[in-house]
Length: 203
Image (cartoon, rainbow, N blue to C red; front, side, top):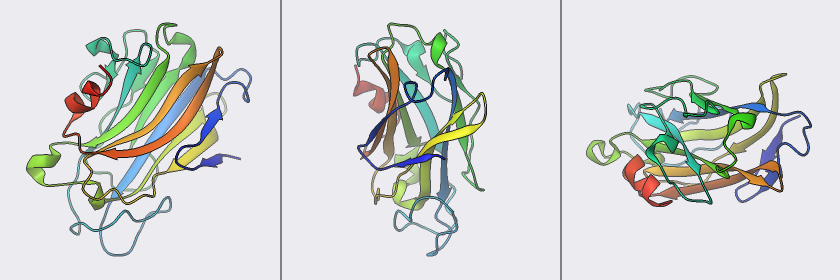
């Protein structure tokens, strides 16, 4: 049974799951369609226009000693696979419509270079400033981790805070600790206008 995390919680991934080497990280969200939430995960974030066309993008930053050191370590819709083959983005979703994952990232833990100690999962709204959009126009955002070997859902984290006015979300981290991998539920909203500003936080 999947563990439901709250903001700020951390959990062992590999220590409690012997043999775990490959995971699917699914991220999902829905545009606010009306005053009633139509999703099945999380809670309504807040206001926003009905039926807004919002393009959210999930990305991963691969950090060395908690720092972003090279552009190849940014995995996003324009660069879907890491050089090591350990992080693979399955592609961009332009609307967020429908249930389930909107974007998925496959992580092969064995292929992540030993120099990389942390993976940071973020979601930002494409062209948010020009379109005058923010995460108050999004509901039911979540991240989940699934064991790729047996499709068992290991954990889920629903981002249920009010993120009105925020244009980017630092969703979660997957990091090494004593030769094991752990997962941290971050859930921090920021006013970063795009990936370039998010990356700058870690340089």
